[in-house]
Length: 330
Image 1 (cartoon, rainbow, N blue to C red):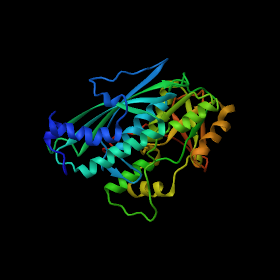
Image 2 (image 1 turned 90 degrees about the vertical axis):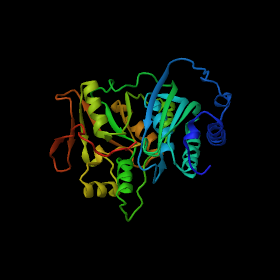
Image 3 (image 1 turned 135 degrees about the vertical axis):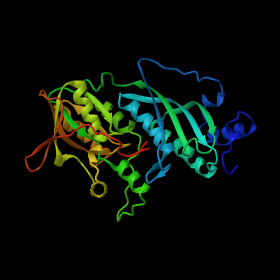
Image 4 (image 1 turned 180 degrees about the horizontal axis):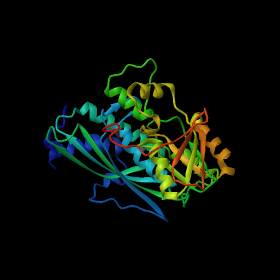
């Protein structure tokens, strides 16, 4: 089995071999291996549910691949609601001709990433489409998690809240852009792709009163912060100098004309907490990333926009990104 063929999605012997020798071997657990038409789950109390599809190009990039991205991305969406990830579904749409030696490390990376949060893939589906109908591999995942801290919402940013960022921004978008353009950098640039539940769990354990959380994926922190302004009817005032951006990301942005605030992240989140809890929250975040920072505050002012304050005393709006920034980013 060197390449995926249409017969691997036909429901017969070849498909059975693919599922058993690859997916069950790496992702198997007591629920998945029952091979029922639906997983029977135990959920107590309030749960969060999310779904996402992943179509990243290239499939492999510095710091991860589409499989790691699929698991981390779905788990992170649950974590941003204060939910402990528990169960995932996973569907593969595989293009005919994909090398088995490319598919297997993707599945292995999914198994490895699941161990970070303790979540399990409990059901799934496999489809193989003719060559040219999909760009190698698409993955769809749905996640369910148990709410550990209720009340976290984009609508709950309050005037006076401190705004924190968990690490330096733009690494994922800059990494993929560099890979597509075969850009050789003097220093390695890696995607920030990572599961965020451990740091959120630590915040919950430390009783940090989190008002809002959001992982800054497509559209970067620009999209997240503008969505918060609209949802919570606040103005966000940011200290531009405090926002962590690495020299490598800044260099890629200057070369291609992008704004680091608009670039996608896959392991970076924005948090809003009361001012008197900001230092405690920052201490937890810094235990996971030294680049974490308090970058601004929420104000009861209009217009409900994001304002960047430069080191030179000037101010400008940080607008919602427009147009197509980077295709196939996640």
